[in-house]
Length: 123
Image (tube, rainbow, N blue to C red):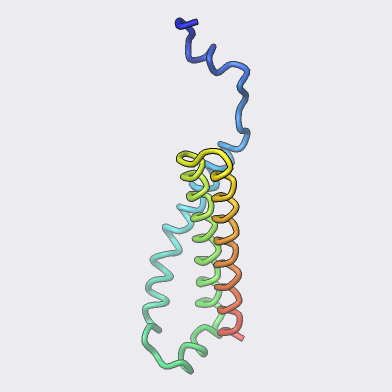
């Protein structure tokens, strides 16, 4: 029994069946964020510190509003997937399930709140 190979120890355990999907989701969202974040910083930096009326007029234009929404959605999706992987690695038992549920709820709540605020600001 002590002389089992790694393959023999893993045989029959099966796979989680979502590893590749998770990996590609993280790769795609990180590539998207690598493009979105610098554009967002320069776009948002131009209006930072401006009076409320100018900010409302600025975000009423389509490009800043769409860019902000995309950055928010992609960023929070990336956060959700990354935090879920971290929790799966370091938490065990029921705590793992509750933490994953909490992170998913938190990320969707932040997404919904941010998009609601953006829509209120842009319309």
